[in-house]
Structures are given as structure tokens and as C-alpha cells.
Amino acid sequence: MSKPLMAKATAVWLVDNTTLTFRQVADFCGMHELEVQGIADGDVATGVKGFDPVANNQLDPIEIEKGQKDPFYKLKLKFNAAAVGEEKRRGPRYTPLSKRQDRPAAILWLVKFHPELSDGAIGKLVGTTKPTIASIRERTHWNIQNIAPIDPVALGLCRQSELDTAVQAAARKKAAEGGVMSDDERRKLVSTEQSLGMTEEPKMPGSLAGLEAFTRIEKDEEESPADFSDADSFFNLPHGDDDDEEDDDHR
Image (cartoon, rainbow, N blue to C red; front, side, top):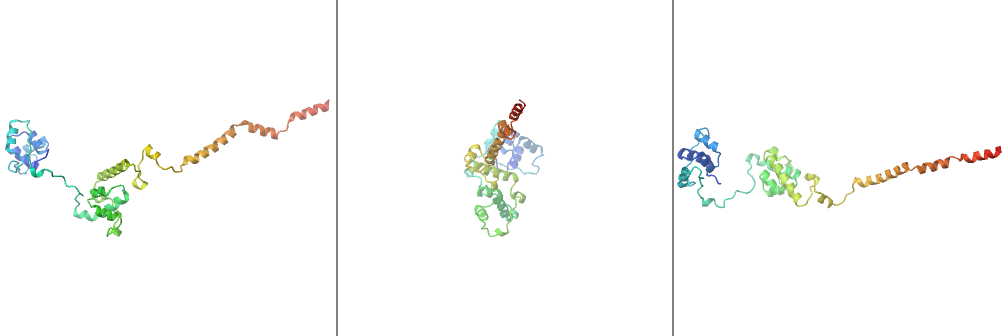
């Protein structure tokens, strides 16, 4: 539901000039019921002059009469044809004059450390235009030699939560498109399907496999007693034949 102009001043007028319930006034003005009660008690909106919604073409007198007769009736804001089709202004946020000279440094920082951000996302963060961002990306800005990258959060051009949200959104968009971020773009983990589809690169398990085969051969040689028995038979002379010759001599 749309709120009337000068909602708090309108609530002050309704509390002072009608017998509407606090709930009705709160619903119409977009406020909390306790806040409206505070206005009636003089604790809230002290010194605020009431704003007549009827005289300013925001509320029909019939609505007030219906609301005073039925405490559960909800007041309806008067239809304003001039407000039809009105949309919120789209574009870069407003940047104070004292901070506009810091925008090139913030743009350069974002371009350098968060290349995944689009020009539109950067424009919303620091309140600038795409041509300015493009000139800094392409290093054609008239003062590019004197611009040093500075964190826009430190400059007060945006909040850390806004920057984190923009970076995460850019990462999700790139992941949805099937791309994998590089190390410079804060490389993210990819799914198994994506990793299987990547070009194969030389990996350590290949060399370990050869080492494992070599170890297996050595292990088999150590566990095989046949080799050592053959060596003993090769180096040790047969003692049995000598004994037989000595026996023949005695005979």
C-alpha cells in the first residue's frame, strides 16, 4: 500500500482531528500502532505540524466517516492519476561532491581486484557511468598516470556488505554460464561435471604410479626366497661329495 505524503504529519492531523483508532491511522500512514499511540501521548513527533490529507487531495472525507463508524475499516488513499506509471529512477547512486574525486581510484581498485564485476555493477557501487569505467579499464583516462587503486569501502563510496553482495552475484552469474574463475578472479570450486570436462593436465599421480610400480618390484624381490636359495647354492660347495671320497679312502 502506498503511503501518503508527509506520513508522520498526516498521522498527527488524523490523531488530532478524527476519532480513528490507532490501528487505522497506523495502517494508512505506514507506521506502527505504538508510534501512533506515542503521537497521541505527546511522546512522538513533538512539534510536528499536522498535514491535512483531505485538503491536500490525498484522502476523501467519506473514508474518514467510514473509518470512524467501523473500527476495522481500512482507509484507502485517494487515487492520483499523475502517479500512475511512475517508476523508481534507475541509474548510478548519488555521490557527494566531496567524494566524487575519489571515484576513479575506487574504479581502478574494483577493476584490478574484482575483474569479474561488470561495468553496471561497478557503476551501482560507486555511482559512476560506463564510459568512465571503460576509460579506466582501457587506461585511456586523462589522469590514469596519477590514479592509485583504493578500496571503495575505505573511501566511503559503498558499504562492505554491498561490495560482497555484488562480488557473490558476479560469481554466481559466471558459474551459471559454465565458466570457471581464474586465480586472479578469486577462483571458485567447480562441480564434478565441469572438472571432468576440463583439459587434462599433467598431475602428480602419474609420477607416483611409476614410483609405486618400482616399489612393488622391490617388494616382490624381497618376499621371494628362491633368489636367495640359488645364491647360497652357487657360493657354497657341496660338502656331501667330500665326505663320500673320505669314506672311500678309509675303505
